[in-house]
Amino acid sequence: INPKIISEAPVAKVWDTVTGHQTYREWTSPFCPGSYFKGDWSKGSKILFLGPDPKTGIEGGMTSVIVENILHKYISIQHNGYVNNGVEDTESSEVKAWAPSFENYSFNEIEGGTEFVLDMDSNDEYYDMFMEMWPKSLEKIKEISER
Image: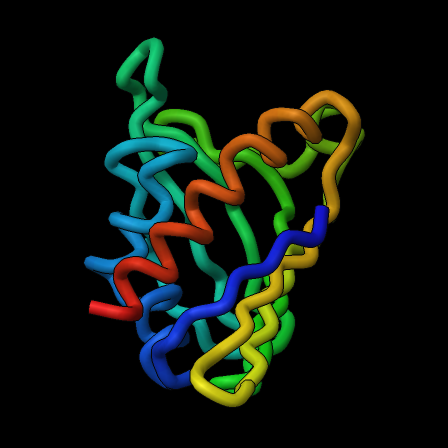
């Protein structure tokens, strides 16, 4: 999956939109209203991407590690498993079928703004869902960063 968007905002503003606690909640809402993260975006850091399950309301999400962070240029996230109700799962057969997987963000300075590019691994099961939701999230990144 490799969508991108152009924002008229400078790279630093787009970066802050993607990685800021409050703005993260906004731009990830197409995936899961109430999404947030615990941890930080520095290289080598563990980070949890969490939110309430839309059907059950039980908190869940992903347990991940920031593999690379080049300020205002690039972030690479390695997803290692699920979090269900506070319990991390990195060993089940369900997780081993897809983990590790990577989600990479590139922030390219262009004339008049920033090109934000997503490069993400996806198995067939989730491909259509991501192709529907990512463009909505990218539009939110554009909207928030241009405020």
